[in-house]
Length: 322
Image (cartoon, rainbow, N blue to C red; front, side, top):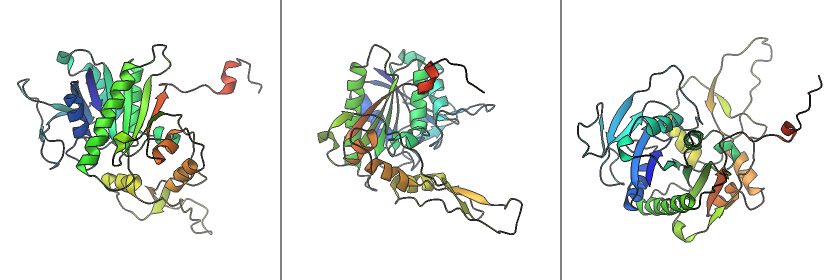
């Protein structure tokens, strides 16, 4: 297959993207032709967004041969190689969805048509609706599906800070097997546009089950996803690490401020996801959904459509009484 790989975590020269190099190498090892178009920096939690009005510019990344080790092993260039004998990835200063579009239509034509778009592996799980709705990883796969391409969003679910290269390599090998199996048995009736796959980043993941699942339709609790802070600038990589690997987030503390004021208080706000709500929704759910399956250490495969589902009243076609 000719596979286009994109993600929302950026190139492997960043600490926020520790898996994509290994996945590309495992896909190549399995005999696939791989093209790569990534955001030039981390673009997590951005969904299927575009940057309207911005002219997107490419950089050219030439990765090292090894998929683990020194983050600076690859080299970054402002101009493409004049010859075709160099492996070169495209980095775009845009969103994951933009990378899917640009990778499909503006690069790699010399390799023939793209058979499949793989977005990921994401640094952390994208199970349950509240994660999936904001995921740049799933957003890029959605964009590819909207371009009538088969696509798979691949995410690695973290349970600890264990970034053992052997564990990562096993997860990538398993991910490749899942990708190949899904492509071979893709429904021909149009019932599936893309798959969201969550692989637990645990030892011996290849010996665990891979299950088709529903997506847990959860929502945030009655708390805010932003907390008040002093004037400060958060670091995106650090914040992503806290969200993906850290302890349960606390509910947003809604301060009342000065009760004598009648106007707005000038305040700053920092992203502080109530992760405890998400974990509680998984714990309280019935088996069979993606969150539960990953919690149990198995790989979840969730078939999706690249569209908004219709509510029950949509097909009645009745006039709305005002």
